[in-house]
Length: 259
Length: 378
Image 1 (tube, one colour):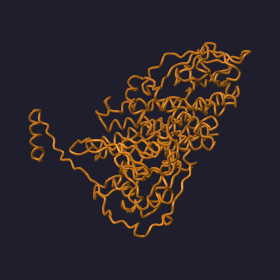
Image 2 (image 1 turned 45 degrees about the horizontal axis):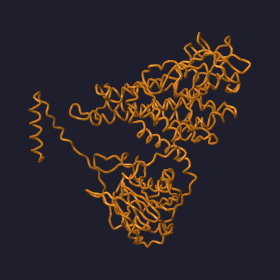
Image 3 (image 1 turned 120 degrees about the vertical axis):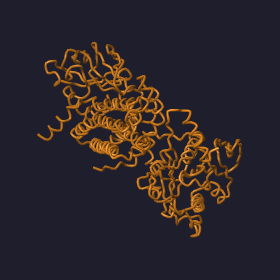
Image 4 (image 1 turned 90 degrees about the vertical axis):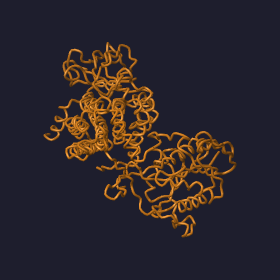
């Protein structure tokens, strides 16, 4: 029976983020947290596998101390246990730092037969964590997975590529990142929501993971996230002659460089 | 009182919103047109524990409490207040049995209600001015076996789809409404018939009909609570109805406000979005404020329920507030959207019809003042 780890990120809900019109800075004061979208698929996939085959699912997250807010939400979706690292430094962590921390936590809590991740996070969408994590752990990595079966110790993964799919077989532990089409994340029932409080969750202290100080220093530094506002030209052609309106529209688009 | 939701209550609200998006959004408009009972959605509600939300764990309930109930009802109502009405009326029957049932009645009824195998209905109103008064008032007469029920209950929601009804009947014709007793009546009871479905203005899909009792014979064990408890059962259960329907009203209102705000941002008049006009901003601000204050009030009443405290006065205050502001919420949001908002291809007309139902049904609008004043003047 597989012992699965699923990694997830607790991100701000993009629907709650407002763009300040004066300087295009982001107003996140009223933004609530949520499990990153693709990570929900990873959690669902892990839960489906153990529901069918038995085994256990641990969930793991590295984030700011706000990650504590995710505990019941994650555990209501199937995982048996949650491990999380709350670190104010996670606010500025780049993909390398995140992968370093997750890998150290896996070494401490593992081993696992399968490590599942979402293809990318809803906020930064680096798409680097699964590959970096696999490299740090010395495991094979399979990305863009839209279908996954686990038989014995062998993984069969269908990857979605640009204009084709690819079937990959992997023996032994691996890191797999999944796309949204792999499944439909469940809506937890109320008993699952209330039962989450009874499942174990453990905060791992960052300093207990044996990381060197340089492992936690981001090399890629985010300077100024800014919103993007589309300024409409508000050009309206409303003459009574519809054909003339269309002709003017076409001419106007052509003048804008549209071909 | 804490005005903040617990993490579980937040998650239950989110689950209800996600549920509504997946199961109710695809059917809400059609249901409004056809009035068809949403059987598949009700089954899904049961699978997600919404039908046993506040019932005790020993009977299979989720034991999530009443703040969770109103949070779920509000979020379901944002998408379909009709489906939320089905949940609310089921919950009224379940509440009455959990509150006044003896151990045998609870064991017989609550597991099926909690699991959604049986849907509940709460039958209190009659065609006369008050239960127990009028030519077709439901009368309960003692028999050697137990009770015989004769008469009609009116405007019963979940009529015809419920497997069990909690029914208020008069036990002494001379005493009228003062002699109400409550009974648990199975839908299969011999002599019980469901009248034609009523054509309602809104909340279509939640069936409403009369229940006609033609000498329905019940065992003694069908009596819920004591023989003189009927009025108290009706009053307290209707107070819960006031709180739950307030949550429906707020859910509908919030959906309308959000739709109107989105419309105002994109609708350009006089060369700029109408959201920049002070008159529009005032309408949106006032409606959003009414929703927010009503939400705080109904959560406070639900919290009293969770604590086992009296809550009828607070429930009446919420009912009174929304009786005055509920319909206005929709008038004002339609005003923001103008002619488009008035059109049936936009959602506001459906929300308008639904909010009329949630502010009018189960308790008449002039009743809350009586409850509040009685408390003040006692």
